[in-house]
Length: 190
Ligand code: HEC
Image (cartoon, rainbow, N blue to C red; front, side):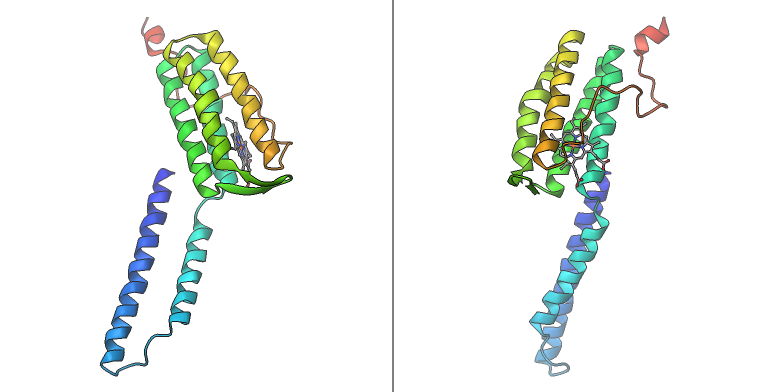
């Protein structure tokens, strides 16, 4: 997924370079009197069209949020099985995904005006996600469950702020992935 961003970035660079090269070639040709000087208005319109096209290829915020939900669900099952290295991995993915979601749309129009999605996400990262990280690091199940429930409340709070109060995450009943073993390697080896 991350690599889609890289591709989008590369495409953007390619477009800019492409337009830059076209413009400088045109300018050179214009100097030589081959073609009339490029119309800057037309060049901007062309660039805008390419930007719009590229934006259409980038996943929207809701799609990215399904990744947050996916990893956050798996996190629950890893921790319930005391598989702390796996839990640590999934929490890392959740944190990265939420940052990605913010980059897609840092500010949104909510029912009470403009919502600073970036600010809310940073607050969640600094408090709820940090508590989860600490519980995982200290391998404390009860602290983990408490922090998980607090995070669920924070998920809902952000959804409420952006005007989607019906998106209320809950403790999951089954993992999102079935091909990964959730129990600990050490337990299996016995
Ligand atoms: C900083 C704000 C914020 C936080 C925190 C947040 N979300 Fe979201 N979430 C959003 C936004 C914005 C959308 C809606 C995007 C849209 O519809 O354009 C959304 C949508 C969703 C969706 C619906 C996606 C779909 O299209 O089916 C799910 C599922 C979801 N979030 C899960 C979670 C979970 C789980 C958490 C907590 C770990 C969480 N969210 C925390 C902002 C947030």
